[in-house]
Amino acid sequence: MSRPQDPHRTFFPFGNPFKMMLPKGSYLSPRLLELLNNFEDALAERFRKLKPKDREEVLSLSWMTLAMELLCQTHTDIKSVITKLELPVCDWDDKWIDLYLDNTVKLLDICIAFSSELSRLNQGHVLLHCALHNLGASPSNQLYIEMSRPQDPHRTFFPFGNPFKMMLPKGSYLSPRLLELLNNFEDALAERFRKLKPKDREEVLSLSWMTLAMELLCQTHTDIKSVITKLELPVCDWDDKWIDLYLDNTVKLLDICIAFSSELSRLNQGHVLLHCALHNLGASPSNQFVKACSSLDGWRQHISSKNRRLENCFGILDSLTETLNQPKVKKSAKGKVLMRAMYGVKVVTVFVCSIFAAAFSGSANKLVDLQVLESCLWAESFVDVQTYVNGEIRNIFSSGRVTVLKELEAVDTSVKKLYPTIQDGVGPIEVEALQNCTSDLGKRADMLSQGLDLLAKQVDGFFQIVLTGRDALLCNLRVDGGVPDPMRETDNVEGRVVR
Image (cartoon, rainbow, N blue to C red; front, side):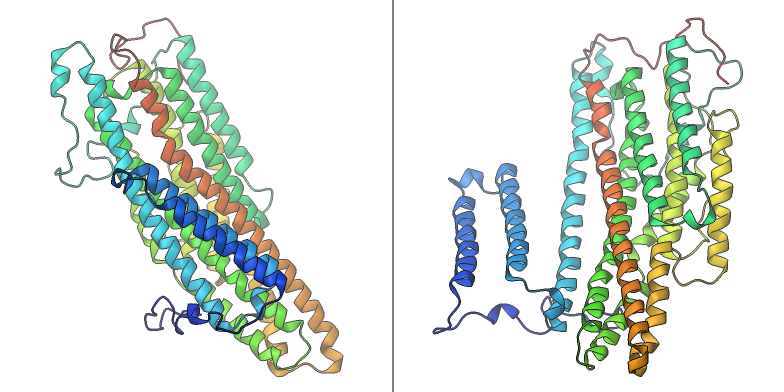
C-alpha cells in the first residue's frame, strides 16, 4: 500500500502493466477471445464516435459531455470484463492492488478538480440572470447595480455582518399565510431534531445514525428551497450583499461535501485489503497466513492515516458559527420569515457537519456547542439532541479509542483479535477458533462497507441539493419586472404574534 512516509510514486509504481500484451503466437480460448474482441470493438466504435464532425465541435460543451459519457461507458465495460473473467482481486499480485488503490485516488482527485471548476463557472449564471432581470426592470437606476467582480478582494463568510440575526422580535406581526409557512417549517425541523436523538448511546456515531443525520439535513435544505419559492422573494430584489452571501455559502458547503466524500472513499478503500486477508485465510497453504498478516497490517495503517481535505472543514465551520449573532439588517415581513427559516438551516448544518468533521478527524476539539434563540419552535428539541449527542461523543473520545465510528471500531476489534492468532501459527486445536474469528471479521467488514456506501450516497445527495439550490432562487429571476418588490412590502395584514 502507499504509505504517507513512502516516496512519491509515478502512476505505475512497478512499471507499466500495459506492456503485458498478447505476443504473436499467443492462444486464447474462444470464449476469452470473444470477450476481448467485443471489448476492443466497442472501444474502437467509441473513438470513431468521438471524432468531431468539424472543428467547431472541438471543446464545445456538447462534445466534452459526449467524451465523458464514452469514458463512463468504457469504465463500466471493464468492470463487466473483470466479472466475466471470474478473476477475483485476491488472486492478483499485491502490486495490482497498489495500482487499483493509487489509480482510484488519482482519478477521484481529477473528478473533484473538474467538478470544482464547473461549479465555479456555473456560479456566474446567477450574476447574469440578475443583470438580465435588472435590465428588464423599469427604474433606470437598475442599470447601475454593482455586482461582485472577480477583482474584488476576498470576502469573509459574512462580509456585511450576519443576516441570520434578523429574527422576529416580540410583538412582530405576520400575515396568516406567512405565519403558517414559518410555523410549518419550524415544526418540521423540531420533529427532525427529535428523530435525530439516538435511542441509546450505542447509536451515537454509528454509520446508520450518521446516515439519518445527513438525510435529515438534506430534507431541511430541500424545505428552505420550498420556503423561498412560496415567499416569492426574487434574488434580484435583494441587496447585492445577499448575492455574495449565496455564492459564498454554496462554495463553502460544497467544499465540506467534497471533504466528507473523500474521507468516506478513503475508508472504503480498505475493504479491498480486508477481503484479501479473508481470501488468504480461507486458503489451505500455511504461507497464505503471511499474506493475510500483510493485508491486515496494510488495513490498519490505511485506516490510521490522516486526510488533509478535512482540515479545511474546521475553518468553514468556525466562520459559520462565529457569525450566528450579528446586528439586524433590513426590515421586511417576508425577509424576516426567510431569515428565521435560514437561521434554522444554519444551525442544523453546523451541528451535523461539526459532528462529521469531529468523527472523521478523530478529535472532539472542534465539536460545536451552539446557543440558539429560545423563541424558535425547534429550540427545545435541538438543545436536547445537541446535549445528548455531543456529551456522548466527548465520552467516546475521552476513552482513548483509536477509531470512533462504531462499525469501524467493530472491524478493528476483530482484526486485533485475529492478528496474533495467525501471526503465531494455527495448531489443529485452534482451527475452529480461527474459522469463527474469520467469519466474524467477514460479517463486520461487510457491514462497514455497506454502511459507508449508504452514507456516501447521502453525502452525494446533499452535494447535489447544495449545487442545485440556486434553482429555487433563479426561478424568481424569471418573474416579470412589474412584480412588486417583496423586500419593501410592509405586509400589514393583521396577523398573530410569532412566538
